[in-house]
Structures are given as structure tokens and as C-alpha cells.
Image 1 (cartoon, helix red, strand yellow):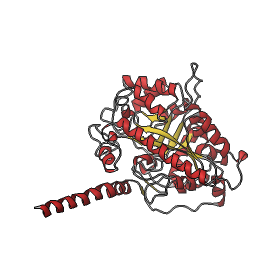
Image 2 (cartoon, rainbow, N blue to C red):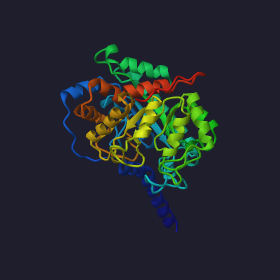
Image 3 (spheres, rainbow, N blue to C red):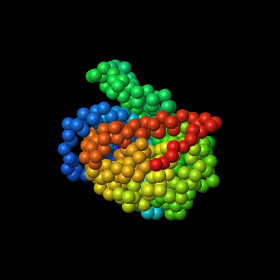
Image 4 (tube, helix red, strand yellow):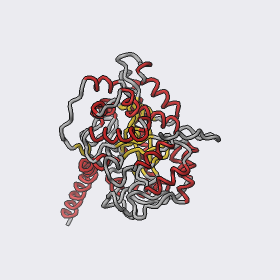
Length: 415
């Protein structure tokens, strides 16, 4: 009997070790993929131009996964070494707190959750097993710990790139200033880079608007109101009812603007997007997605919605995966960006990869020069490429994270 008990305990320990040690990595490998299809050749012009760009990616879900962002991974799409190789100046990292089982673009209930099992399998703090708010706070804590460790390494080795958590306009302004070729540091000195925290769906408020202040205090500076299901703040494009802003949502948007949290319309239902445009006093973003003119998928923006974002002075981040641009080729990314440029102007075009968000893409962030080449091939000028690859996003982020004054600045007018 004793041998049986010991054997059972051993099998249980092995099973637990496999679950906690292997399952998270296996799960990510199955969801965050690179399709392996050929990539176009990159010209010397594209390589030289790319090195001078201040690149901003408005959306990546890297914090969801159990790996050290400081180290180059053999899975997923984003970590600091690959961001440096791709010359990304500012990466926005989103907190994903809940996704429904059987997730799809058409209709999802919020009654189930895939993330709970992941939090347990990744041995996250028990407080994150049951609380969506605590999941976001843990993501912020995990990032801050990684950056603190990185800072210690930077103090030991002055040749390392400096990475900072950006939370205010002054920091974003300084980052952009130092990376401007006109203000270049020593030729061989690594340029500074930054990260910023965002939220994918405000279900993590758990119905209490006071939690928005707590999230802001933790460093979050952008938030989408809904993700793949309707919540108590707003309806989702992928929900069952797809309603607009709820009474709570109508309080949340002004409070976000007051705090200096940028409103993200990605995943919002069309009614939700229209409701936001009616009450927004500051630039809004669509952090990741596509446009229906080049890829007719329900989550992508209509021309009317593109004009609406432009009317607020915001920016539209174009994604790299199939459902965003109906392909994974760099040319398809450029095609969507070109449509936005031609419809409302280059100043509203941006990048929104959705890396590490359960997406299959053609290239990871280390090969982001592919987008620069695709924009050149699509006829964009060097100045337009500078704007689309990050200049526009810097403008919106710098303005949006500042607390709203009593007299809000006038909204930009769409062309």
C-alpha cells in the first residue's frame, strides 16, 4: 500500500511538473506563431532609413506570457533584445485579463475564461487567480521588476541600451528628442528606448470606477474599453449584444481623459465607437487592427470610423496578422496604411502589431525593417514613413498622457 501511495505521489509530482513547467510554453508556441513564408529582400535605402526612425508599436500582449522580457526567447514575437534589433523606440505592452473559450470574431459570451488556468499554470500570485484587477496589477509589477533588473545591468555596463517605463509627457518628449538624428548621442552609444502600459478591456475595473485610479497609479496610460466580449463598461465587436457605452462607460471615458489615460477603441462595437466619438475631448486611438476597405473583417474600421479617429486628432495602428490585413505579408500592412493615408492623411497612420496576442505573423519585431521596405515599395516618402512608423504615435501619446486641464484643447479636424 505504501509503495502504491509513493508511486501515485511520484506520478502526481511528475504530472504537476509537466503542467507547470511545460504547459505555458507549449500554449504560447501554439498561439503566437511566425508562418515562415518568404520575406522580400530589404534595400540599402530601407536599412539606412530604418536606423534613423523613432518607431512606436501601439500594442503587444507579451506580458501575458511566462517568459523574461529581458532575454531573447525562442518563442513569441517580442522581448527587449528583439525590440532593439528591430529598432523599436517605444513598445506599448497590454494587459490581457480574460478571454472566452471558443474565442471568435463574431459572438462571444463573457461567462467563460481561458486566462484563469494560465494564471495557475504560470504560478502567478494566487490573488491573480480570481481577480481581473489583480491580473493587470501583476502585469505592471512584473514589468517594473524586469526594468529594475535591467537598470542594475545598465549601471554595470554603460554600453547597454537604457530602457524606461514611460508614464508622462516629459518622458516621451525626452525619448523622442534623444532619438532624433539631429540630437544624436555619441555614434556608437545605444539610443534609449521605452515601454508603456495599456489594458485590453476594462473588465478589470470589476464594475468599480475607483479602480481606474488604481490602474493609473500602477502606470497604465492607455486602455481599450472592451475585448472579446461585452462587459459592464462597453459592448464588444465580438460580443453577444454589441451594445455601446454603458452608464459606467460614460463615466469612465471622461475620467480616463482627466487622468491622462488614452482611450483605445480597438475591439469596441461600432455603437461603442460612435458613443466614444460623441463624448471624447482628447485624441483616441485604434491601437491594433485593420481597415475594412482592404480587409473586410468585422473588427476592422469603416471609413467613417477612420474619419472619426482623425477628427479627434488620434492615430490608427495597423496590425500584422491575417484578420487585420487579410494576409501576413508586409505589402498587405502597407496597403492598409496607405488607405488611411489617402483617406484622412499621413498624420493618422501608425503601427499596432498585436504581437504575442495569439496571432500568426510573417515576422517578429526584430525584422520590422520589412514594414519600412514595404512602405517604400508602396510609394511613401521618407518623411511619411517617419510619421507612420512612430512620429504620429509620439504626438498622440505625448498629448494624451498629460492630465486634462480645465479647458481642453480643440480637437483636430479630419481632412
